[in-house]
Image (cartoon, rainbow, N blue to C red; front, side, top):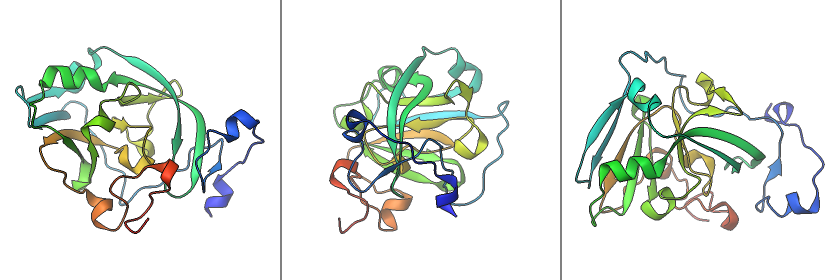
Length: 201
């Protein structure tokens, strides 16, 4: 069924060099997730930042919309082997969130908390990248519910399950803590250039 959702364009040599091993390119954006698509009431929605920080805080949707914004053009790579080149995401740069939180020196990792108890983890040096956003728009349009509306993390330097949909909080940690898929056998590091798909990779 997934093959029917995939269109495979012809690539230039330069584009081919951007495709990690084991991946194929699609012009579409396949929808893959575990569980149902959550419903969101923006009037009661909030986002929490806590853990190894000097300034834990919570913000509302209206407060999020007033934050500095940035657009990122990047490639994304799914562990299920599709790659989408030249995707566009818009949202709040993660450096704004980190700056306001004032991370303690002990903060080395982050655990992303999303709707329905879903979590995934990243080391701080991967999170703190110029391309990482709290994203509410893709390709110039608001995120659809299937792609994470109202908010998802976008962390393009790892397989895309590390970019949690329906994200509701960031917990900063001194020690790494595997998330949902990592506990079920997905590779903790998830570097697509190394094909780190599963625990044994």
